[in-house]
Amino acid sequence: MDFKGQVVIVTGGARGIGKAICEAFAKRGANIAVVDLMDEEAVKTADELKALGVESISIKCDVSKSEDVKEMFNTVVEKLGGVDILVNNAGITRDTLVLRMKEEEWDAVIDVNLKSAFLCSKEALKLMAKKRFGRIINISSIVAFTGNPGQVNYSASKAALLGLTKTIAKEYASRGITCNAVAPGFITTAMTEALPDNIKEEMLKNIPLRRFGSPEDVANAVVFLASTEAGYITGQVIHVNGGMYM
Ligand code: NAI
Image (cartoon, rainbow, N blue to C red; front, side, top):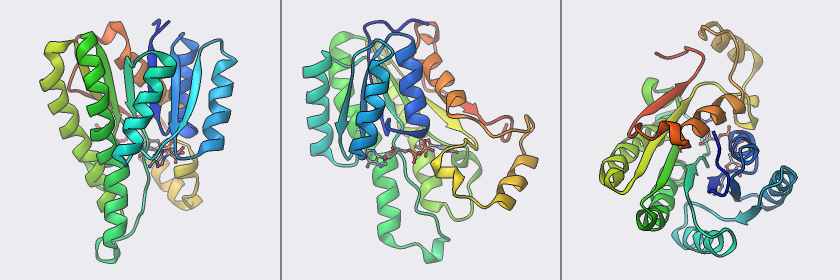
C-alpha cells in the first residue's frame, strides 16, 4: 500500500492511536497534518514523522470548534496542498454513571467525539468532492455495540459516529469518496492505562486472542481502509478487538 504524495489529516494525532496512524501513513509515503489540542506533543510527533522522509505539519486545533476546524483546513491546504484522507480520531472520556453525569460531561464528550467528525468531514468533503476522490475513516469503539456502564456519553457518541459514517458513505459514493469506521476494543494507550490492574485482568479473560491491542493494530486497519485496495468498501465498520465482540 503506497500513499506517496497523498495528504492525510489525523485529528488527535499527537499521541496514542492517532500517533500510530500518523506513523503508519508516513512509513508508506503520505504527508501528514498532525492535528491536536496538545501543541508541544503534536510538534514532537510531526518532527518524528519528518525523519521518515515525508512532509509533516502540526496544527493546534480544538476539533469541536467550527472556527478552529475551518482555520485548520485552510492551513493544511496552504501548506500541504489539499486533503486526500481524513481520520477522525480525536476522542475523550468523562466517565460516570448516568445519574451522576453532569450535563457538561455529556456535552463535552459528544462535542469532541461526534460533532468534531461532522465539522471535519464537512470541510474535507468540500475539497474531496472537487477532486472526486477521498477517504474518511472514523474511530468508533467496541462500546458503540456493547454499551458500557459509566460511559453513557462515550458509547452514545461512538454509536452515533456509525450513523454519520453510513450517511456520508451514501451521500458521497458517487464522488469517489468512501467513508468507513474502525471500532477498537481494548487498546493499550494513555486512555486505558489509567484503569486498575484487577479490571484489566478481568477484561483479558474476555479476549479470545488473550492480549490487549496495540495502537499499531488499529493503524493497520485504518491504512487498509484508506488504500486503493479498499476502494470497493464503504459504510462499513472493521472491528479490531481480538475477538472480544463478534
Ligand atoms: P489518547 O487520549 O491517548 O489520544 C487522544 C488524542 O486526542 C490526544 O492527543 C488529545 O490531545 C486529542 N484531543 C482530545 N480532545 C481534542 C480536541 N478537542 N481537539 C483536538 N484534539 C483533541 O486516546 P487514544 O486511546 O489514543 O484514543 C484515540 C481514539 O480511539 C479515541 O477516539 C478513542 O475514543 C478511540 N478508542 C480508544 C480505545 C482504547 O482502548 N484506547 C478503544 C476504542 C476507541
